[in-house]
Image (cartoon, rainbow, N blue to C red; front, side, top):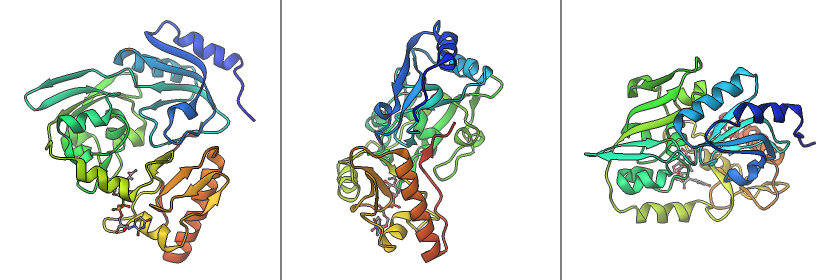
Length: 294
Ligand code: EPU
């Protein structure tokens, strides 16, 4: 059953309508996730300025609405039934101030822009700066935490705080911002190597199914040197399918959407994989994918 836009949606829209930016009712989340999955959100808001992002979250939270900040939507699995709250898109927050090997970037700056400026090790990662910092995105060559100088984020109290790197709680695909759900507004980065990203992109295109909608790697690697993709592959699960959700033949840590996959089908496949891998290897695969629940 799809969640309808009733009084709740109207209340939320009324709460936000004076804020600068674009506010839409009933926006399909499938259109805003790389998985191309997800029902409609009560309110979909693209703030024009960083302060407005903070204010929207404070207001929604204050009135008990669920909320989430979607960066590039590249790690999100949104519910088929829709989202009875506020989805904030950072796509308009693209401020960029560069000086002497440092940059101040808005949360919605595409990561590809950082790669071109000086972020060689991040080549090929989709999404935005805010999303990448929240999940400490990276490749086998390193992760974005290595370039972070500071992060400006919204605290649960509604205050904005500037976090020094050692306060960010970075770990493998993890940070304080992700754990505590602190929306990131802007980030200070130091320039890294520019370098030729051609070979990195070619390797990614060879080993990953970039031609179909997906959310990248679904599971975290259990530890350095042990790849979740390898474990799933060894279980013979490539090609396993539930509805239109399928384990990629090219990389077993990718679930692809063959066209009309539903979130429920992806989750069923996730269960099957976790079950098989724990039985065969005694390893419980943890999700890297961000499953949106209310
Ligand atoms: N492998 C298989 N079968 C598969 C997939 C992989 O046997 O289906 C083997 C490969 O042959 C290789 C090993 O597993 O020997 C590692 O594979 P790969 O180089 O693809 O690295 P990965 O650990 O699977 C990680 C990141 C990727 C990132 C690549 C390249 C995680 C969970 N994944 O993958 O990140 O692109 O390294 O740097 O950390 C993502 O985060 O969304 C993502 C795709």
